[in-house]
Image 1 (cartoon, helix red, strand yellow):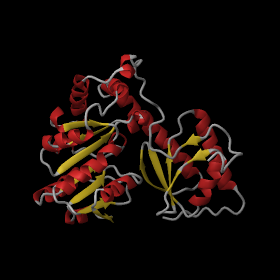
Image 2 (image 1 turned 60 degrees about the horizontal axis):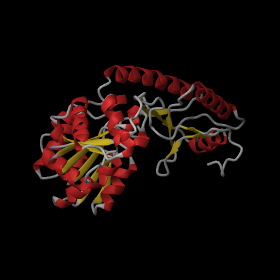
Image 3 (image 1 turned 180 degrees about the vertical axis):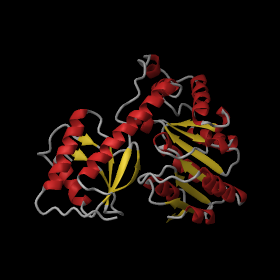
Length: 333
């Protein structure tokens, strides 16, 4: 981006991700976490903590991995091993689910109706959805999981943004091999770089995932940080409130310049407007990166600024675009 926009102010403001800009304030990481491989007992302790935090039936239902990104292709492989041939993804959706399913050999179809997913062998629902924040009722999700499970299929529910949306988790219902829940750590806790995610599944699937991941899948620093963060209820409650306030501020800025909000969570807002391509380029000239979508050229997703200077620069850039001669402000619904 610096090569394309050499006059953009530094440092760049990255609003292209749905990651919390306020990272968890963990205690100092001991040197031993870097100097040696983690003890198996540390992983088991984290699994117990995560099971409690996510509402999983038990630690035996919980798998810790180096990010949910690593778990997606493994789950698709397990489904293929069970005879799955087709995959349905509730769309629009995070593209990696479809990509990793294709890598495993599944025929992938993106659908817009959750009920249509019952026709597939392997299905993916993101709840709340990325990028538009849509939410499906727990009863709808469990009905779909039951329909797939009865024919030997599998439903994967990606709850990466559940801490910042209004969806109800189904992690407690992972008592059969027809339902798997993915939970991200890095997004809500603002620490994507430590690469940590979880699968909640029946023990047979959990064991299969762990065998594919192999030993020492999660780093010592990640174990240290997550074991603190997932038991810190006070921080979690306070951060949810802070993100809600930040989200309201962001939406206020976007509405102030007549941009149409199509959805989101308290970590990101999706804008839908015929001029977002021009807006995205204008923002990059101001050193601000947002998330565009090739397949949906009228959509633009904004993450949250982290500090006041970033808020000020974003507001100034939005107002400048809104006030530019020849700019038509007629949002597309």
